[in-house]
Amino acid sequence: MASVNIAVHHVTRVEGHGNIVVNARNGVLEECRLEIVETPRFFEAMLRGRPYTQASHITSRICGICAVGHATASLRATENALGIEPSEQTVLLRKLNFHGEIIDSHVLHVYMLVAPDMFGVGSVIPLVKIAPEAVMRALRIKKLAGDLCATIGGRHTHPIAMAVGGFTHFPTAAELKELRARLVEARVDMDETVKLAKTLPWPQFKRETEYVALRKEDEYAFIDGTITTTDGGKYAPADYRKVTNERMVPHSTAKHTAHKRESYMVGALARFNINYDKLHPRAQTAAAELGLQPICTNPYLNTAAQVVEMVHSVEDAIRIIDELLERGIRPEPLPPFPGRGGEGVGACEVPRGTLFHNYQIGDDGKVSGANCIIPTGQNLANIEADMRALVPQILDRPQEEIRQLLEMLVRAYDPCISCSVHFLDVRFV
Amino acid sequence: MREILIVGLGNPLQGDDGVGCRAIEALERCELPPDVEATDGGTPGIGLIHLLEGRRRAILIDAAEMGRPPGAIRRFRPDEVALTGSAGRFSLHRTAVADALALAAALDIPLPEIVFYGVQPGRIGWGEELSPQVAAAIPQLVAMIMAEIGCGRPEAPDAARNSAL
Image (cartoon, rainbow over all chains, first blue to last red; front, side, top):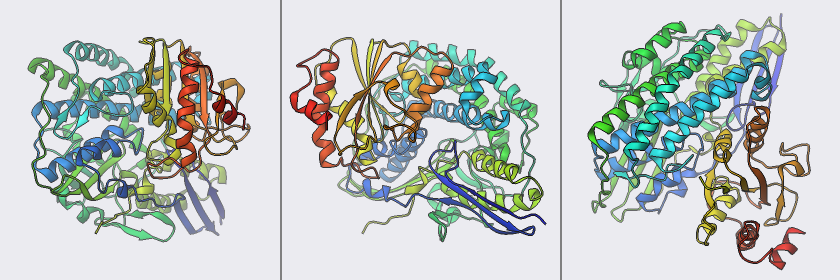
């Protein structure tokens, strides 16, 4: 019977540092865990005492990849706490900005982090020799996504124009038209991306899983919605703790979450499984090309679901720009502080899954308490559950291949471990 | 697009890692020539390529582990250092900068002439405060960069002393 002993320190090509530990003796799995090596930091403490207008700017700096996602969840939490309703134009601009970040993050993951595994090379640098046109395409898509975010958010990487109740900077019609033309051109690159994804040798593995995502009846949800699970739960964002049920585990400084099972999954595959019917027809066609249909229980295909979402985001961004151009962009003033505080939750589907921000704001307009639950934190328990199911199925393979499949599994979740260091729940008294 | 770009890199929530962003804040208060743009680049990852593309010169300000006392400033060019973090005497802790430059080189993407201003961090970890030595280095850093773009006096004597530590 096979015995394996695998310890991968600092899994490469994930954001941050994580270790995989797997030990099996005589065909029996004895140890199987994903360790988060960074110690918890109390990020929330940074918000305490700060004016509500600063919260989104501070939290958008948590992560260079999810800056728009953190800012948007933060703004929604603040607006819900203060009873501020963003205008239709604000909602449209935020959705457009969000699509930019979804495309930006997914293209990086698909091409730079996952594709090298599939081509059997160590990183994107040697991939340049094998498939230079694919890497150039990835950079082209990334540039478009970055320019989209900069046009709406006011700056590359960090969206300074996003504010509570609105924007402080507005794109011109000419800028929107230029973006629209580039998005239409990008359809060719999307088609090529689907073609590439179709040729990649996705590992075969299935495990029944509970999937969790926000859902809206009128669109594929990225901002707001009802927390929905494939095991039958529906919750308002304010009740997020009924889904996340955070708990400490001995081997990780990050908390684990569980709903109806020992774990659940968030991210592109969860959204695809729950909201397939809301995808743009072109995205549904892309899914069919990739042989992807709900409910898909192969976590490796989270990356394929990201390809489908990129197609959707390009199409929906074009639609939103058309709507904005038709309405005409009008500068709108920001709403004043309503004079009293409150508590609010903001929920968004950021590239890696559902993100929650929860703030208490005092009558002085200062943040008095804050909690943040990030997608990677919610996926940790599920990655381990996948590893426990996968390892016995592949124990007869060479150790190097087992290690590779485990690393690819962790990467498929696109984990942002550098974020998961600061999502402990802190209550300020 | 302005010909010369000054980019501050780093995460301002991670202590001294944010020195680049804080230097940009200080530079934004200075009078910059019309062909110079200063931007807080944050943690752009591979996106750094797109920030740099099309410029003639770029000045990158970042926290750099150089085995020196906290706050020490050193000017260097990419080819003077190993940016990978293990092999060379210098290492930029955020390897994404190295990845971005390596990828641009592999793809023959023309990049501007690049100069780094590395600042030795004292403390990296969640928190917005710079350590006192790094905060104290910012005026010198700004003076050196203003000299780099042809404004103000050449390198201030105390800055030169600090960089030679």
